[in-house]
Amino acid sequence: MNKRTKLILIIAAALIVVAVAVWLIFFNGNGKDAGNKMTIGTEGVWSPYTYHDPETDALTGFDIDVAKAVAEKIGMEAEFAQVDFDAVIAGVQSGRYTTGANFIDVTEERAKTFTFSDPYAYGSTVLIVRADNEDIHSFEDLNGRTTANSAGSTYMSYGEKFGAKVTGIPTLEETMVMVESGRVDATINASDAFTDYMQKMPDAQLKVVAQLPEKIPVAFPFKKDADPALVEKVNNAIAELRADGTLAAISVKYFGYDITQP
Image 1: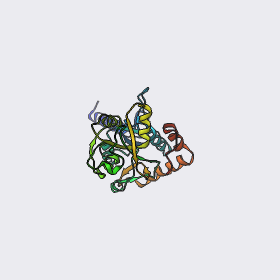
Image 2 (image 1 turned 180 degrees about the vertical axis):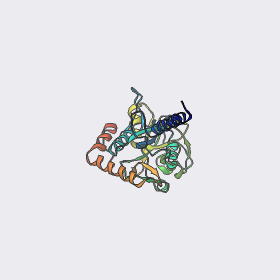
Image 3 (image 1 turned 60 degrees about the vertical axis):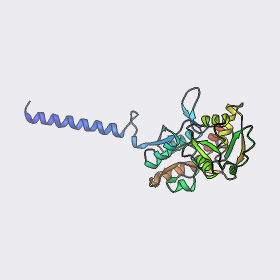
């Protein structure tokens, strides 16, 4: 074998290595374009929005099903990353995740940082205390009290707004236990989440004492400079899923009623 032939073989081998590397970068094991994945941050510990099925341990929930339906509608593959709520928010902001599926409220403050899709659901916010608590009757009564909520959540912001000292807790169950045990005075959370918790824990000594009057829109957040075409596709998908009854059906599956209308 002469030197010219050896050189040709070396170059050919190098090209093969490069081709394989490119294939690994742009394609997954199913032959799908990796750029066609929608990476989605979610807690996975907040039933019935995002949690693990107790029998199969599969990630499931209202927001998970909606995110999957939207991704499928626009021809993308939903890939979920389970992290704490504040990491969901930070991950979307940094671009690590395409979006988040965690019943994320649209607020004026968040709108300064994120581009939001159109709403796909609407939530009500309630104040929860121990069943024998006779001192807290309204959100204003939280001034000087203690509450617990997921770090970075709207509910934590509400606690601080009303003058409470707020402790960041990773899961709803831990939060409820802290209230019931008297370690904190109260918690603020979604009314549907509390209803779901009480159905699973009917002996829990907890009660709702107040509810904020307005319903808060829930949507998918994207980083501020997100591709407008992608956000438009997501908005169109949400509109189609609402029109064909899919959103309502997913809601009824997890709540027994429709939370996708204002």
